[in-house]
Amino acid sequence: IPYIFQEEVIRSALVLKLHQYEDTGAVIAAGSTSLPEIDQAHRNWDYRYCWMRDTYYTLNAFNNIGHFEELEKYFDFIRNVILNEKNQIKPMYTISGDRVPDEKILMLEGFMKNKPVRIGNNATYQVQNDVYGQILVSLLPLFIDSRLNYFDTAKSKFITSWLLERIEENMDIPDSGPWEFGTTNQFHCYTYLFHWAGCMAAVKIGETIRDRDISDKALGLSLRAKKYIEKCYNTSSKAYMQSVGSSHYDASNLQLITMNYLNPDGGRAIRHLKATEKVLFSEENIFLRYKHDDLGNARNTFIICGFWYAEALAAIGMIDKAFSVIETLNKTANHLGLFSEDADKDLGQWGNFPQTYSHVGLVNAVYRLSKKLDKPIFL
Image (tube, rainbow, N blue to C red; front, side, top):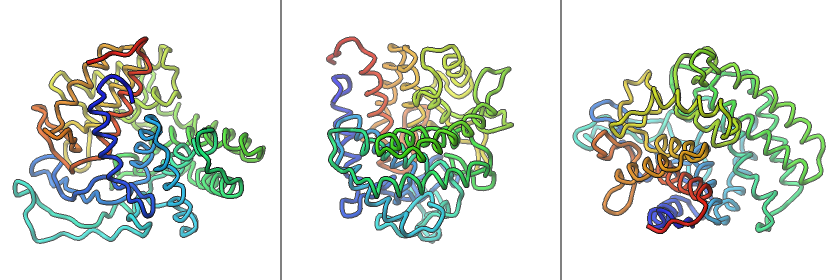
């Protein structure tokens, strides 16, 4: 556990642990449904399911603080999902690995009379191709970390090959992206970042199990993904846009820096951060994930985006600013140290609660910052 923000990290680790269903290894995104992201904006969703994307970040946080049992259980969850699916992994599943029920609207008024109150989630029908790379990156420590004793060559080869085949099949297919735009499929930079990262993880897996075919295939696919990422680069703004041909900024692209696609010490990473910062981050405690939306203006902070910002700042060496951003975001937690999904400019809580995304953001940002410090800082 890092010395900085230690109390907050421990609290977040406990919250994340409580969101994993021990029997199957599934990790839910939140324990609530229909708490509004924005007052009277109808952005009220049911988050009581296991998102492949959210789970990647949760497992990464556990790995950063030396917890591996959760990852071992998730391996079994993923293996069972793959065995039950023919050629596509859905964006989310129930804690038992079953299909998420179709969305239903209840005749109820929710928090502060916000409607609708929903159970089920139709995002299960969306195409979210980033999941394959995220699973590969999530499982990588099982193969390369000598502290773990969960190695099975046959299972490892089957799962890695299956996921690479899915990346290959979906490489040229647009998707809904990380924010689940329901009406617009695009070639999202974020999706190709995880195609690239997943393939690089598969290269290492192939080397570990001495399977040259896996490594060679993964390397070839990573180069294809990289070409798509570079198509998202806007030469005039010197930043990576949300998708190929788009002029929209996206906070998720800060992970081009934190996942080492861009060299954190290089000029392109710094320019990309500065350009994104200018558009999406303000001095009023607001860290937007994007500025356009087919569901209405997302004017509240999506808390993990603020932590991604802090993590990117730490990665490029802006230590003091990263520390300050984390301090500000910590003020959005309630008196029990619990984060919601969103926060307004006055640091008030909105969205489902408690939200694993937000707690993951804290753990990973603090971990990144602590690695940049020359010596421990005691608060």
